[in-house]
Length: 333
Image 1 (cartoon, rainbow, N blue to C red):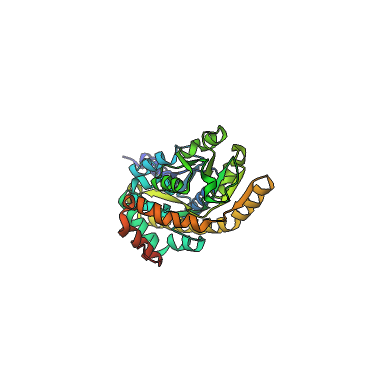
Image 2: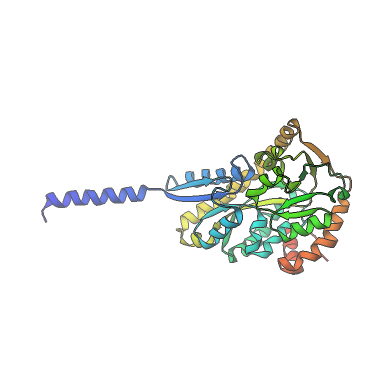
């Protein structure tokens, strides 16, 4: 073969290699909540870090508001490996690994400081050891406030005020048991259908923090009253499929893990700043905020009735105490 024919072939091969090498690998992230939510903020922080640190070799595409399916569906796809990343509520991950249900126990955490301890260091490593066995790698815990109770009928100032109210809850045995113990009537409804169910009066109320409440426009769904009850802190994991992770080169694995840490740090900052801002904006728009007069009673009911009823469904007392020990909290007797 003469030189005049070899050179064009070599140039063509070089061009093809360069184009392939420079093409960004695309990863899709399914986000259950709207863009202007805590989930949305964490996902955008994750995208920013991934794309900057990979120097253009990775493109992260974000799909907000459940546009790729409801959270249970996308978590199932992550487990199979057909969807690489997803962000959603912890209750929707529990069916895949029951021990993660520990995070939904009512009054597990008393304040944000305890939540942060429980999602970092040894506690986080313990939770991730459970998740990876089920096919998920938790990269980031999105901090989404306590699940404050809202409704369309009347203020909830004490536990007895729950008696005539129907609440939307996720398909969570713990939350269903909690609402029954508190005197309310829980109805499992998917997150994607929650706004319509509230608007049409299928249920009277729901539970979410201020930023998510505002992002979901729940005032437009007849949610007039909100009670600051601290029975559970809503944690929303950003997970990666273990099958997808295993196929990544080591340098990309490191970037992904570091991106998750960055997103979690940014999520905490965002929550700490924006929750109060969202609260003030909602009050200005007409939301009535109520504080409980008997929250000690709620906690007592949770520990005496709910924990014993649901413990076996999350690995039993041994699993619960393993997490409490990792958090430096007293063991459950």
